[in-house]
Image 1 (tube, protein in one colour):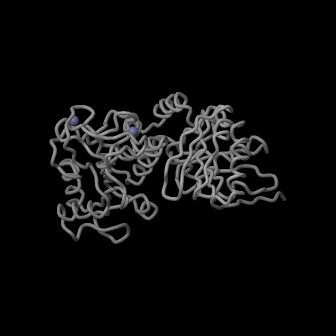
Image 2: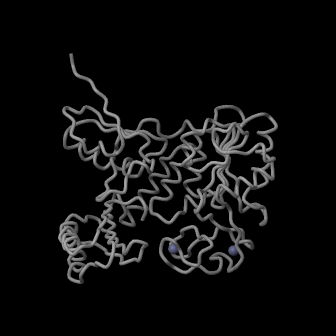
Image 3: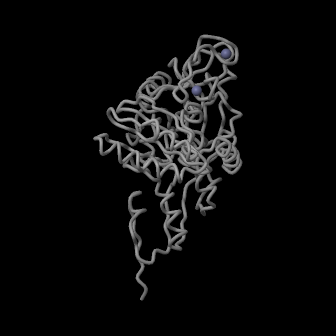
Length: 380
Ligand SMILES: [Zn+2]
Ligand SMILES: [Zn+2]
């Protein structure tokens, strides 16, 4: 009889050699936990997709929204698209300022769920995550005028380092937050509904205030509210929009089937294609747009990105940088980070540049520097 075995494990098993492998599956391919911070870090989907071609096994992924990589490679996806709850978009530009983190419509919906004996969850940022802001005079979302990233209270853009001053739309200088971390949202809901109705996951209260880490333990609910979708969609990384859609679709799947059940998404960018895809329950239009944007910018999967973090004093030499650039890489850096300096190499095809990079890294390591290399990083 044939020997049939299923091997289950974390991302690391993507590199294991297995005799006569028939099929490899990455479950919920868009979850961030698939990629660890070891050096050099490659996503298991990248490893398995290459191996599948070289070794001749089938490679599949699952999840509500495929990544651009998987979509571009034509990797078969199980369970993508549709099959998520009704989505109600709450446009925050339609209401006057001073409403706080929950709109009137969301407040009414939460009251309604509690009255009817149902359950709700309110999803917000984890502690330490900055909410997005809107201008109190023209009500538009505060964004960096050079790169479009959602602006926080800080004076400097998290993505491009540009300075953020007045509202890019109207020149106004007063802003109010559209979201808050879980602790503050819990206070708001407790004041609104009553302290006994609010808790965390699994403590049997009518309303749970949750962050991404709580989702695995969250039972299905009748109403799920996303407090601040914009900070996710217009986040500082090139993958932010795609990751936001995957997360929002995952949230929509935590809503119990039933009349009146829904995902309510608070946003000040209701015409964004992430919101569109979510509303119609189909990520394909978004993925096409995203592919066009990535191709134009030279981002993966249509271009290569490599991040190098050098701990301590070491740095690339001028002639090393010239070799990288001669091999087709655009080099950004050095940017000061907590542990040292960070460099970014970007280009349509970094094959030749990577060979020069390998030599330069050897020199740095020989000189005593600790170096971390992230190929195709999630957070750039
Ligand atoms: Zn304004
Ligand atoms: Zn910017």
